[in-house]
Length: 327
Image (cartoon, rainbow, N blue to C red; front, side, top):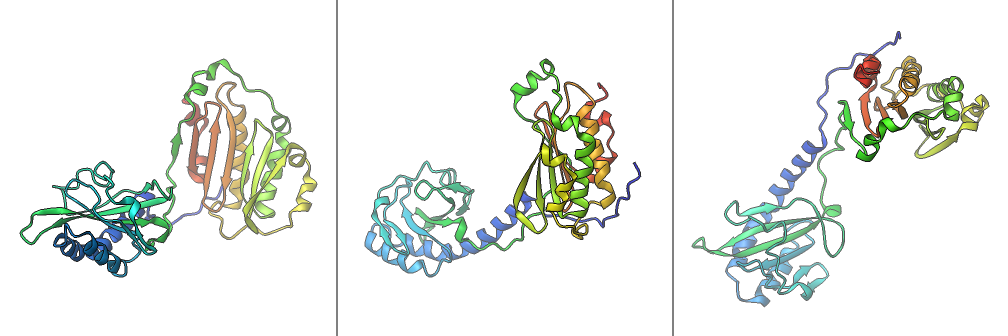
């Protein structure tokens, strides 16, 4: 297969874990500073519920983005109402928070902890809790200052993380894998018309504005996404996929400039789909897709295993890579 592969400058995408870590570091710095002074003041008021609640109500204007503030005693039992911007919520007075994940191990490790995100019990929304150990002037442990945050309301300083383009394999249902060699590929209508379907899909991608196309071989259908309407998808049945005049329904468009995949690579990618579909009666391609804008090929096999691989790496793999030489 003679395919022109472009040369890309090396890049350093920020993966999801790095993006989350950087965001947490920014939030930890911002929240910890805001709670430090307040925790010292609240430590001196322990035992005076009214004074604590009055001070926490003022603090909501001092601690940005905070949804709830509260104080716990040294045993993790709440000694004030939840202080919110709508007023105090007395339902939480006396609540034992000692076994909540954000409390476990906080004493003795650090004076401050920002929890992992969790789904809140009350709002059922992703949330964070910051806990600051309160200490008196002589460093004695006086309790805990807690602040709850709704993830929707926190500032996001990081850009959208970059999806990794490294080959990824994801195993599926083990029951399907166990029964793999007790089943054989059944000839589908798409299999029977593959010589029409593949060129037609190639045409839709290269000349009719489709940037993401997925072929479902077993169910004889395709799913396509268009550059001019990327938020919706179209489902094409076998009747549409075997009728070249379907191109009349999608106006002619030049191949998108946003494509990473070269135009002349589309047909060879679909031809490899054909080979993976027919190469073996037990292990065979059930569905395959190509996204020309992010350059990724996705494959789902009869063993329910899924693969995500960059298009140029995919083109360079032989059948032995997918079948382990046991074909």
